[in-house]
Length: 404
Ligand SMILES: Nc1ncnc2c1ncn2[C@@H]1O[C@H](COP(=O)(O)OP(=O)(O)OP(=O)(O)O)[C@@H](O)[C@H]1O
Image (tube, rainbow, N blue to C red):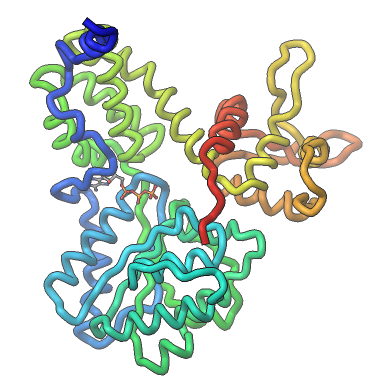
């Protein structure tokens, strides 16, 4: 027997609690969308505008992560397009786009299947977009997922990008009807800092996806849990306990699915016949950590540098990271990094990054009265500060330069 026979025997599932673990994959599309009737209705009403010759130029779709925005927007538009020849839909994820050029290029890829080279410039990319759209039906919905990524372009000027998409010459000349559905995973409608000439070309149509409360999360998860676990392997009390916790902490279907997958894996590792409340407990923290580290590792460089500056103060007595910190301490921490001076950002940009991080829910801030020093802003991470270093390490391994 080779060592691999032993290895594979050792790691083969014997008494697994799972029947079909794949059912817990958050990337797998569920057969049915549940608990989002109100949002499905709002989106369907918007789409039905084509019968009256109108689709809003923009629709803002927002809400925290894992609340079904992508799934619902895609499914409803696809189902509508399948029933109406005059409507087409394309989906574009801007997750990896660090510049306006690469965002336009992603749209180009969705429409033409080809990426444009950098030398053609934004003009060349838009020309290709209009040319492609000419062959599309009368109405095209383009879903732009993770639109908030555009804010992270250091030379941020999305005005030109949106102006072209909404009012672009090529578009007007060819009489192309485009409806941009802008998806962002923030609690508030994303502020793209657009100027008034672009703002006026956008519509104020907005659909909000709130975090799932317990009953909604239960409706989303139950069919998946039933399929995923062997009969009796996930007792009802444990299932309810896990769902209640996931709803209270996150309201996020993706995290909840991951929680149950990991809880099942813990049960298998411990050779348990059923998933227990303890399996849920140990994984609540794991899931939280994995998700935050993943989110941090995808942040732009300056955001991670500012987070490193926030967490660079160490308590003498314990050797632990000392929080909260002040803006002055963050600046001091930031100044100690060995980065080329051209890549450094100033006080004002650091403050902007702090506002961004607060909007993303990664830090919290408050004002404290400090006697003679007056009122001083206090800042701390909303998660275990040691995760920043881990995310930074992961970032250095995974980060590849933006392909343009
Ligand atoms: N209402 C729902 N019905 C069935 N499954 C759902 C529902 N909501 C979420 N899910 C499951 O959770 C996964 C994550 O949802 P989705 O990607 O739509 O969230 P999102 O709000 O777009 O998140 P993000 O903002 O992070 O992109 C889906 O692929 C699906 O498996």
